[in-house]
Amino acid sequence: MSNGAWNDQENDLIVADYFAMLADDVCGRPYNKAEHRRGLLPLLNDRSEGSVEFKHQNISAVLKGLGEDWIPGYKPAFNFQLTLVDAVVRWLALNPAWLGRHSGPGAPTGLAEARPIWIGPPPTLSNQPPPQELEQMLHIARKFDVAARDERNRALGRAGEER
Image (cartoon, rainbow, N blue to C red; front, side, top):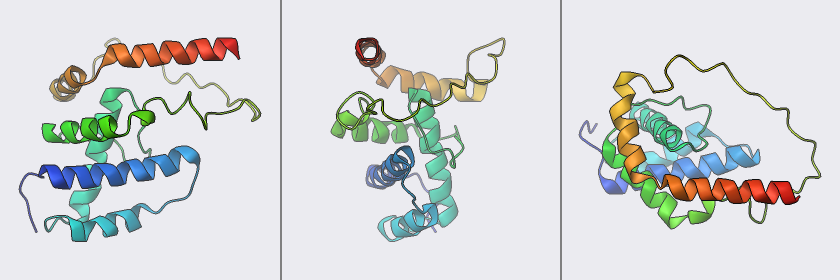
């Protein structure tokens, strides 16, 4: 089994597969994580199932750092290669509708019952991630266009107010 760093092609393959599962998860469609993992193995350079599973957790960490949804079954693991951030950013650049998916066609119509609001636990004294995650989160933040995300959020807010 290969123990070396993942190359761009491997990262791009696993990121695309992760987003396919995440799309199913967001839409409430059933999917099988083990099937996805086994389907990836022949395409990767002799990676183990455990390696693929851990890389999925790394992708969750990258998405958490970007403030995006991630697959709940893949708890974020923050000790990832920084080239994985590049792969996620590449995927998002090729699929720009993903970031605006809550406000375009296919967005909720308002006919379904409103979901209960869950605020979550109160913030800690420090809103920063733990120190071992900080450098990776800063690297992600430098690659992500926060102003564009804020503009999308404002547009979504205006659309909600108009509705």
